Length: 126
Image (tube, rainbow, N blue to C red):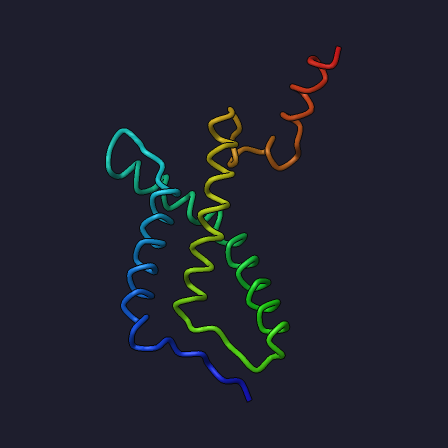
């Protein structure tokens, strides 16, 4: 039987505030500006959908390790799980943004095969 750690009443407000700020940072890091609101919204949603599987997977692994270290008796509160997801999403959005600003296209086929990377590396080596 697993028990859930519930935050005390003193930290309940703090947990909500940090959850809101982490959620806002999550949206800010995924924000992709376009020429109009529809383009901005669609690009931002595409970025969120691109990083969501990675964030979900790493969140699952972190929760698994956390529960394993605690002896499978403790399950973190749902707000903590969502904050971990937001944090993982922020990290992946940051690295995808670095890749995009470096000239990469995460939606293209060259990114999946690595052909664009090697095409740029070989002339520099010569």
